[in-house]
Image 1: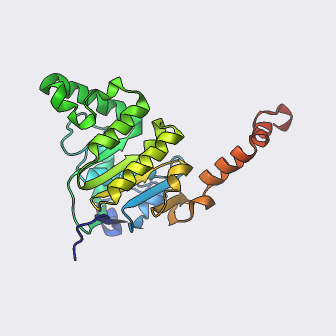
Image 2: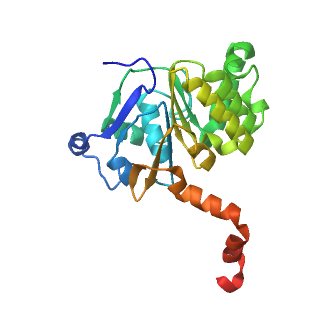
Image 3: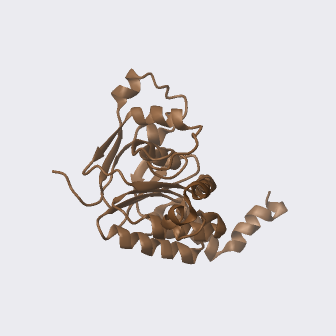
Length: 259
């Protein structure tokens, strides 16, 4: 039975038969990422938060979901036609070997990448030159994202663009946000998710975001994607221990006698 409320996307799984039949080498990117090669992720909540160390596969997973949804791999949705990502062929090949199961298929949403957000903001400015500022900036608070601070532009996107039924895929949305603004962001996604019309899949390094109540939290460690309590993660433990006693870390890192 189909559901009309989030989560819409319910499962992401690698199809091993397709992986073999299409001769995808597990020695090459992105199939050489163990957590991706063996993925079988059941999505249980409207908000899924993914964390793990650099290179663990978080961003690759989000790119595969965005590509499956037809969103621009550089950032945006199906209507944002600009640029060709150098990763497109590799991610397309990965997606062709995966299975995405939906409770209800949705076609709207957004893929937000912190590492290439400037490409998206520049694209919107080019649209404004062609179609007029009023129309082009109406989804972004009425003015160019490039004329706002980095953090303000992120929040402007979240506040003004995430207003439709859809799936919102966010790669490190905290990158430009202060701790206070991260809390504001969490309030925004709660408002949206409570409507039942928005599904969020978020990759993050922020222990604050990882603590989001009632979200499904998974952590990539030892080449596996596992559900766990965020307080058991390296991210939380290292951050907490550092804040409790930064001098101990400085002594170890900077004391030449300890090297």
